[in-house]
Figure 1: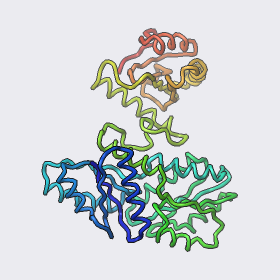
Figure 2 (figure 1 turned 90 degrees about the horizontal axis):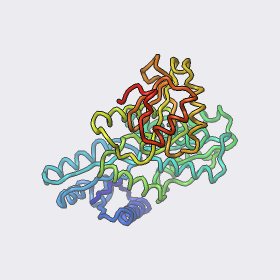
Figure 3 (figure 1 turned 30 degrees about the vertical axis):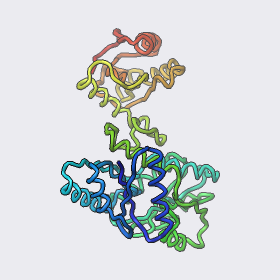
Figure 4 (figure 1 turned 90 degrees about the vertical axis):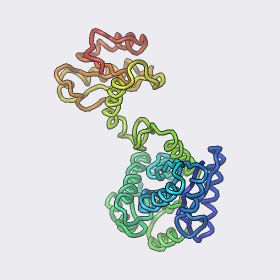
Length: 367
C-alpha cells in the first residue's frame, strides 16, 4: 500500500492534480494508494498515516519536488505518531522527486521540441525556500538539465532564495543567448506561477508550461516507490548503475565500478548476477600513460567496437598500481591485468571476453 503525500492547496486545480496522480499511480502499480495532505485539505497527513498504520504500513511517497522542511519535519513526525499507535506496522519513507532523470528528460524534451540549441539559454525556476539543501538540489537539477540538453541553464527561485528570475536572466545575458526559455519547475498553474509571470513581465522570454500531470511524474513516483520497497539501489540518481545522465558521467563513475568489484569479491565470491556485460576500467594516470595507456585505449576501442553493449570501456584516473601498467580492471569479475599493450587486445578478447577465462599472461591479481 502507498500513502501519497501532497502539499495541499485551496486551489481546485492542485486538488485535481493530486487526485489524478493518485489514480494514475494506482493503475500503474496495481496497488491501493491513499492520499494525505500536509496543509489546507483533508485527510491530513497524520490522519492518512494512522490509516496506513492500521493496515500494517506501506510506502510513504512524497509528492514533493525537493526535500525541504516538509520532508524533514512534517513527514517524520506524522510517521512517528503512527508508529507509536501501531508499533507492528512497517513504514518505508521514499525520497522526493528531486533530480530524478524523468524530470530532467521532461524539460530536455520540451526544449528540444522548441528547437532550443547550444546558442540559446534557459532559466529553471524553482519554488524556493529557506532550506539551503533543497535550494542546492534545485541548482543540481539545473546543472543536470544543462548537461542533458546541451545549453546553459541557470537556476532561479520564485521566493525566499536567490537568484530571482530577473537576476538569473542577467547572469545568463553574459553568454548572449539568442533565445531564453523560462522553465517553471512547479506542479501546476497556481499562485506561485502567476506571481512569477508577473515578475518577469516585459522580459523577452519564451515561457514553457509547468509540470502539470505529465507522465514523467508518474514514472518518477513509481520508481521512487520501487526503490523504497525493494532497496538495493544506489542512492544517487546520477549513478551509472541507475541511469545514464549527462555527458560527463562515464569517466566520473569508473572508480565506483572498481569499488563494487572489490565488494563483490569480498562478499559474493563466484558468479555474480549482473547480466551479460563486462565493464573494463583502463587506468590513464600519469604512470600508465607513460607506459602506453593511450595507445592501448585506442586499440581497445577499435578491437572491441563490435562487442558493444556487451562490453563497456571506461578510462579512469589512477588505480593505485603505478609501475605495473597499463592497468586494466574487468568488472564484475574483479580481475586486474597489467603491462598491457595493443598486441594484447585480440588474445584478451578471445580469452576473457569471449572464452570466459582469465588471460593469465598479463594477470596481476583477482580482487
